[in-house]
Amino acid sequence: MQKYFGYIRVSTVKKGQLGVSLQEQRAAIEGYATRNGLSIVAWFEETETAAKQGRPVFGDMLARLEAGEALGVIIHKIDRSARNLRDWADLGELIDKGKDVHFTTESLDLHSRGGRLSADIQAVVAADFIRNLREETRKGFYGRLKQGLYPLPAPLGYLNHGRGKPKTIDPVAGPLVREAFERYATGRETLKSLRRAMKERGLQGRRGKAVSLNGLSTLLRNPFYAGIIRIHRTGETFKGVHEPLISVSTFDAVQAVLDGKCNTRAIKHDFLFRRLITCALCGRRVVGESQKGHIYYRCHTKECLTKTIREEAIDQAIRTRFAGLKLDDRFLQLLYDELERMEGRWREEHDARLETFRVSQRSVDDRLARLTDAYVDGALGKEPYEERRTQLIVQKTQLEEQMQKLPSDGKAVTDRVSSFLEQATSLHARYVSGNPYTRREVLKIATSNRWVKQKSVEIQLEKAFEEVEAAQKLVSSDPCPSIPRTLELFLGELIRNCGVMRR
Image (tube, rainbow, N blue to C red; front, side, top):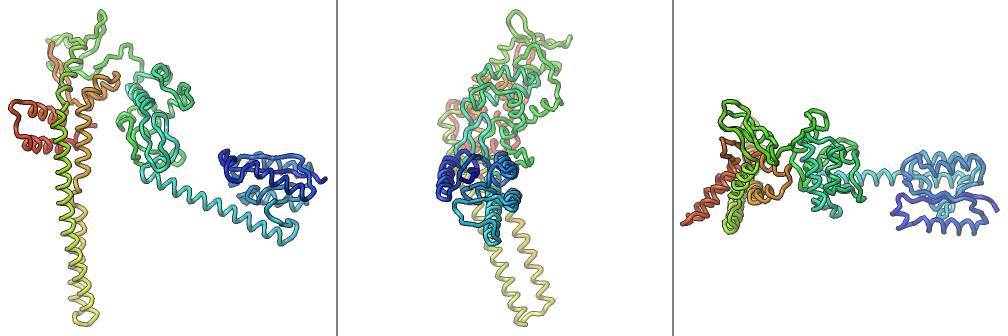
């Protein structure tokens, strides 16, 4: 019997299990060989796309055919052999040299002009199909990116929820990834020491093993954790709709350390309030020291009356101040209800003003139409027509500009205030339960100044947080003031201060 090769291919392992699988192709080729009295002396099985050149198994088969190890090859379909014209040309050269190529689903005589032309047309169609598929895939890929969705597998610290849905924070790995960023941002960790520390904390990769040094470096370079999607191959960036694990400032700090722009020398004692507390008398930073099992912060100015204060005293003062930020549940619900009413009021006002502008626009359009009719009918000369038309166009342009400057319907404002209220009420819990890096971050976000004066501690909150503290004191006072008046004053101040609050 005549000796032939059998070639079977699928694009991916998954496609080998579904659709026209490798087993089905093999069965079709064996049946074809039996019917035509041919013998399969070697099988070439490949899991590789035919759209690209350089398939190793396909190349090896062509080389062995040219070496004369078989009379030809049997393939299931033309698109199983090649979906790029270069590979089809290589196959065509073998046909020109007298090698037989058979396809189980097409009765083509490739040594005749008509059969060869028909096969060439099918090969061109297969190549065009791949080009079109690539273009449609690319459109879908970039369509999701423009929606803020990440169309690739979620990075460590996030979970996948299927196509068309944003990634969500992994409740186990997410906080550990955040801690890794916060630790490295301090400049007091090397990649090796951070890897050891995070391994002890339980941070693991997808396969349940500790994250490698290269993997940790890649993780720290990924802006996805700060809410930004970056496509590494093209360098393009998109704003993601997923919840960020870290702030942009933390991500930038980490990049500065990685790029060697920060001093990363080892620090023997990593004190909780290092470089965060100022002496109220001389204005200089107090310095942490460890003595007899306790940590003290000392002012090193000789003439200053502030000498030492224990870390526990500073910590307790911060806890007490943050405890005053948790709003009464009833008052908090009233705030959310009032915000909802305000948003509805703003939306009605916005829609009413927008409709007024649209009515004015339609009026101008009608006047332009009547003016044009008068000019066409000869009832109006060219000069007065152009003059009035110019006036109306200017008026229409002014209306469009005013519409663009129209204040929003208030949803962005209420969303920002609601998010801030949630942050403020959970601030104390985040500080108390957080690790040292989280507690430092909370302190930086919520406070503007932190002083010690001899043995006393003073914590100055950011303006928006001060409003929360003042509101809590009002609603808890006896007798309680007018709730509507309190709501009105508090939300007014909060809206003014929320937009400029430090992140």
